[in-house]
Length: 204
Image (cartoon, one colour):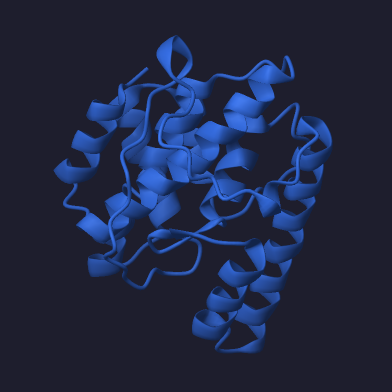
């Protein structure tokens, strides 16, 4: 299991700009707080793997922005090579869309990565409505893209509904501004975000 410092080193190793690192750190913060709530409910959660996957979910992005390709597929390959952990790689691979059944108990890690990513717009934690409004405005350039965005929106709402029921919480109302989450052996603390923002590709 890589440490927080190792994950941040991997992001720097693949030349991710600071704004993408800041985005990834906030995604890990959201994922970590969800893990804390899940552990409090007695759910079997590998919080370290969840947070590592959250930090690494965009590890392939800058290369794909520069050279083309699917950043989730490249990122999953890099995550597997770097960590040797298939659970971490699975979360990276499917952080854009989950192709299977939405079952938070069976597929906690990848579904939480999807949800956490969709709560962070650039370097700010926002509601799903705000995030998807931004995605639709910037990437809904044709009917195909609009359909994909609507499909992703419906899936993320389904994930949120299951999380709310399982955790007995209203996640859309949470600000996720705790500085320290899932400390100790089950995870690692997050660093704060900066004020720097930048545009992302859809699914970042």
